[in-house]
Image (cartoon, rainbow, N blue to C red):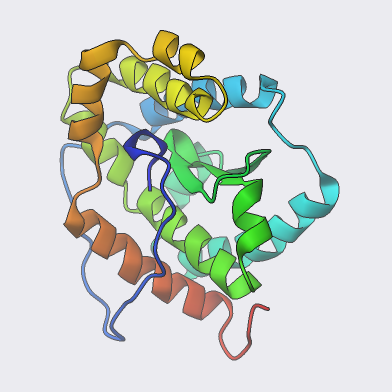
Length: 216
């Protein structure tokens, strides 16, 4: 789930065995513009005291993330141009809430609370695969492209404000510009079709990444 849609935990994906076409949309935000937006948001997260740079947990996440990336690449979900332009960075955040979220430009956030409650690496892999698929299918860019040219920077402020809300409601109020941000958020919620697409693509990516083995 995109961060600006509430940072909610993705549900376990389900996909039929047959390959289905991507939704497709000719009106997408340029990858370079989306990456710039993602860089701006990520730079704020990196400076946040709750950004967790833990080598052990980082290696744990990468042991799941890298096979997912390889599977997305081999399945044709992740093209060479998008792979080159986007960051593909997973950020660990010291937060007790059960959350994982996609950000513009190939950044993903994982809350520590999610890692502590999943019963197996399979469960975590399913969430990461779902979020990865939101990015590879350009769901964020499709949503943002529907807004005005100035909208991405409003979205950036809203994302940061929502992340602050779990710690400091006053800071969130300052970062999110009242009713305008609420209206923006409503327009940026992933559609049911996008969620279904992330489900089926994510499930296929996970199945290929860990074919013949359990992730746990």
